[in-house]
Length: 374
Image (cartoon, rainbow, N blue to C red; front, side):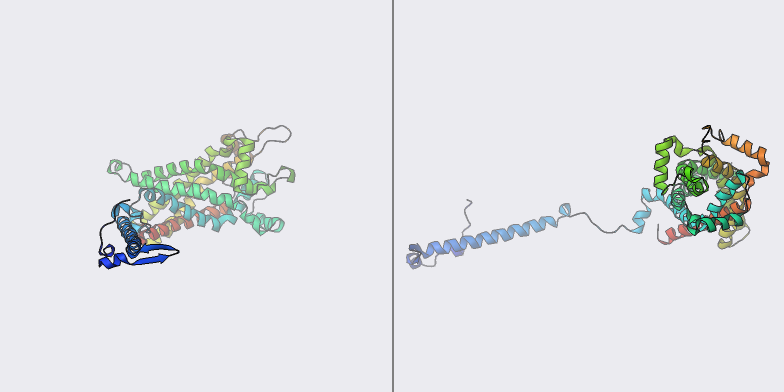
């Protein structure tokens, strides 16, 4: 063992202390031995205490400090590349989700009006709404809500987010030669087409869930929710089946976003130049965008609905349409060009509020991020 340092405790005060003997359990010990044992224990306790102090000192050094668990500040989050990339998508998703919850009953009626028009049945939205309420109950108006919300997270989040990103890129001086409305239109069409392809599976599930109760009981798919619908489609029709009607969905989305995003941005800019207040710009732009998106997108939406809800003839196994173009041609032959705009009042009552709510909320959420320093 390492020799213990000399301390006063180990030194006997006089020679007579050495001669004192202590008897313990029949053994004789000198007082000197007893004192040495006591001092050894005292020194070891002192050494342990010093070692503990040394270790605590090392833990207090910067190299030994534990990582900080402090909550990140708004400034650090705002400067994060992840937040900068995801903020437009999150903003669009939140606005789309709220808007969908508000207008889901109108969307349900819109789909059934289109299906009734394709089958030559009455298309009055009031008649269809009353029959649905009487025969199937009020909860039927929210059939497919889970699919609708998933679609908004993917589709609306992507189209709003991509439009903002594209417009930011379009503000580069190298694009100054391109007219302002042309840039807005191109950004809106591109954002809508890309987002629509990503959102096609959820859109397909939504259409099927909303129209399922109209089928004969033996032909119903009886989806329990959006996850069950998507998994069933993938299992029975393959992964490609999830993108049935993707081309028509993309065309419809391009028309929708040309009417909503491009017209909304242009209307707000024009109203601002006319001296309108920010509130008038937001609501006026949303109102104009709602009408434009309804008018330009309804023909594609009508064809998309027919394509996505179609199923093979039980006897022949043949599909009623070979594709979107064949569907459009057959519909025009049967009911004229105006059939493609069947149910426009209902479609407008569905599209305009959705566009207005989503666009107004988008501005409000952007303001909320700014107020929070994000």
